[in-house]
Image (tube, rainbow, N blue to C red; front, side):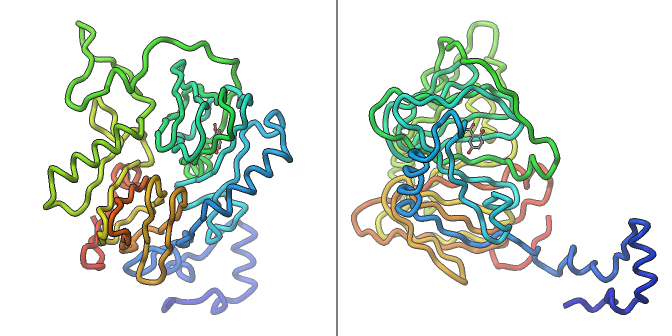
Length: 352
Ligand code: GTQ
């Protein structure tokens, strides 16, 4: 509650005089912008079931040709931010994108960072900075800030993927814009081949690649194998999780958002402490329940949900026989860089 003076306590003509001069008294709003203990979050826990999105996305394919859409995307908008803002959380944007056989989404580049998590369909590719990246279910493909990218499709069925961008932050910072370009020539070299095994990196005689983004495609087959081998190696460890990193530096693949893959063993329940960043959970394989103290969502394959920051979360794999595999996107690199990253194992504030 606001125990400081209210705006109504002030004479109306005084407030009007201030406003005419673009001045605002702080004290009536101080508790609003600096609330006690836990930040105010517009982000609401929200579930987007894939089975509800897919038919509407295919309908968009009939209604709007790719030439008119440039990117044919249904945005997964968080109602807590209002739908018009097209944001899933403070920093994250989510969209489901459809490409039909033979279509081409032209080359452009922009200041926001993006990744694609492939949901369904074979035969599509994204060319990023001249590297042609094939798209198969569960693959993660980066299109980091400033890199040219275009999508094409040589297959015979619709291809759908989940876009994750830091667009809301870039827009808020007033740095969001794009440039259009010509169809890219593809160059030899595939990061996922050059960096196919952890712990060894290419050294072309006189040093390392020096590329800020040496690896652009993270095949699901490799991430899944890493999770399975980690789970087998560490039966004592509950959280079977890997983070998508730059293989040259070990740092998060992009500057602002973080990306992870998690395996829930059959029957497993995993308690995640409240942490400052908002998180997005997307099921690659299997099914999982994502629950907060207030509510829970039962996610099946290709479903996506968003959980606000500072919220303890319980993940459950109800299957007695099948592992569940999740893709997780969060705002942790941003929070760490800003010095506000916080973990609350006891749900109490631990201001860094
Ligand atoms: O595929 O380049 O969902 O530029 C939003 C903006 C996808 C893309 C989105 C984009 C793209």
